[in-house]
Structure formats: C-alpha cells, structure tokens
Image 1 (cartoon, rainbow over the protein chains, first blue to last red):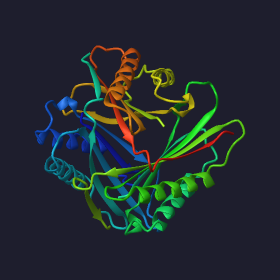
Image 2: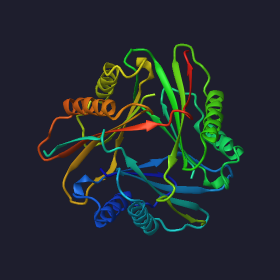
Image 3: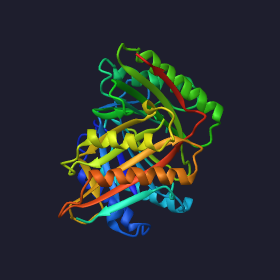
Image 4: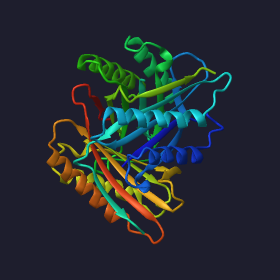
Length: 121
Length: 121
Length: 121
C-alpha cells in the first residue's frame, strides 16, 4: 500500500513512462500520507487494443488508479487525485489532432483482509 | 468515466477485439446513461498466463469490468451488465472442446476524488 | 467468480507463473468457499514498467487481487488472504540485493449486477 496502476493508450508515443512513474511516486511521498517511500508500488501498462467512444476520431487516454488502505477522508483523497492529475498534465502535453483524456481514480483497499510480507533481500 | 476493461485468455484465438470493443461502446452509448460518447474509455488485454480452476481441461474466459461514477441504481447496473454480456455472447461463440466463461462486473468509481482533464487536441 | 489477478514486477525472473497460478487456485479450492473449481479464473501479468518508491534501490513486488462476490465475512476474507500470501511466500524466496514485497488484497464484486454465462463447449 499504496498501489498505483497507470493505464494508457499506446498512441501516446512520446510518453516517458519511467520518468512519469517516478514523478507520481514523488507526488505521493510529498503528500505526507504514506509512512515509507518504499510502500509505493507503481506500475504502468500500455494498451494496444483500446477504443475511446464510438466516433472514428483519434483519441488517447491515461488513467491512474490509486488504491490506498481504507480510512482516509474525502478531502485527503481529493488532494491526492489532484496532485496526481497535475503530474499527468505536466507529462502529457496536448497534441494537435489527438483528443487526450487524463483521469485519476482513488479507491479503498479493504484494510482488514489486506495481507503483506516484505523480504528485505 | 466510464472505464471498461476487457480481460481474456489468449486461447480465444479468433476474437476480433477491435470490433468487440466498438460494440461494447455502442451498447454503453445505447444505454442512455452516459452524456458523451467520447467519455467511454475501453481497453482490452489478452492474458497468456492464466489458469481456470484446477482440472487439466482446456478453458477460456472473457471478463468485462465496467467502472462508472457512483450513484446509479442496481437496476441500471443490471441493465448495463446484461447488455454487455449479450455483446460478449454474440462475439464469442461456443467452441467444441473449450469451456468458456463470460462475465461482466459493474463497479463504482468514488465520485468525489475522481479527477479528470481533457486536452482536445 | 472468483477472479484472481496476479501482478508482478518482471525482475522476479525465476518465477514459475504457471505453477504459482495452479497453487493459488488449489488454495482457493481448499478454502471450501467456492462451489466449483472451474469458477476460479486466475491470470498473471508481468510489468516491465514499474517503480517501487523513490529510492534507486532494486525492488520487486508481487500483488494478488482476489475479487469475490459480496457477502463473505471479514474472517473468511482474512483466511483467504493469509492462505494466498503463504502460497506467494513459498513461490518467491528472498533474494540477496532485491527488496521484495508480497501483498494480497481481497475485494468484493457487487453481487446484483454481476452477469455470467458459461459455454461448456
């Protein structure tokens, strides 16, 4: 916890995903909501098979799903989603001819059945 | 919003995913539940690593997860899942020797912390 | 139902995913919570694009998300997550120089709008 999944359409060709993930993680650390930086587990997936809407226009999306242990207030969640959306906005500029949608969703992980083990290596 | 994720086992070899995604999106537009067709962001992923059950039989699955902003009634959600299941059924015929499971799940996106930005291009 | 998604960083190079999925499914069958073994639909995805935390250390994760129809008690869910975590632990040994996090999350699928069809083949 937290778990972050970035899903994006693969027509966002110039996206530097490694840099973006690091910036998303820094935004989460900067929120002060998470005790240890290594708790933040982020991953990204490009989709080659996608369809935005039904019109034949060229469209793209980047969607962040942030899953955090239950118990935080709506205000904290809104601050988290706004800060992550700002990171997406900085990383993904508007492109002529491409309609891009950026989204951030925050969802709860049920705290009680969450199980975790760390193997420090 | 809405976000649709189609996950399927890659032994559904004849599946035309582009056509299927478009039909799923048309079903969502036809539901009248969503203001703009371009809001519908659907993507598909084939899994090469999967296991259905524990028996050594040849099995397949296609699973749609539809995530919509919270607030809709159970009746509306059931109509949405039934119409999406019907689209799956039309796209994926029974195959001798292959046990196929088709599933549709509808889940809420917490409305308040959802953040979105459109870059029209 | 149930649906199990295993997500892992692709630096867990020696992981035998086929064996792991089968063992996870056997743990679920052994729980006695699910009527038919073929109901268990598990899939795995390796991520090449990931970032754990912000430090430059070498880190890995394996995360199981188990989605089950709503209605089970917290005690049952905890038993499920503990047994799945134990399977992960057995499959993924500690490695010198690699900090590994293993996690299991259990979440509810809203029962009413869940739609399913089986094509026995």
